[in-house]
Length: 65
Image (cartoon, rainbow, N blue to C red; front, side, top):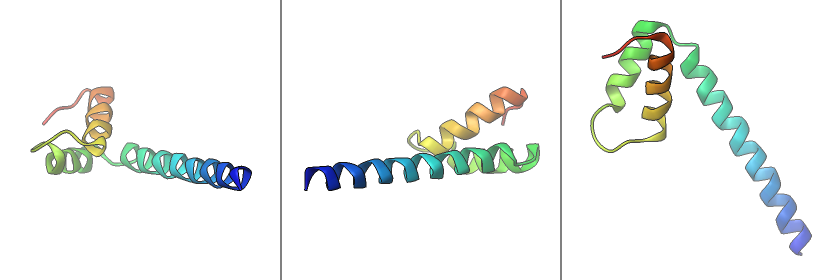
C-alpha cells in the first residue's frame, strides 16, 4: 500500500510540474502588451505565483507597469 501511495504521489508531482511548466511557457509566449495586461491583473493584493511569473518575465524583457 505504501508503494502504491508513493507511486501515486510521484505521478501527481510530475503532473503538477508539467502543468507549472506549461503555465510558465504560456506567460513567456505573451507579447509585451499582453504580458503587461496580465501583470496588471495580479499586481494588486497579496503576492501570488502568477504575479511572480509575470514579474519575472517583465524583468527579463526590461518592461514595467
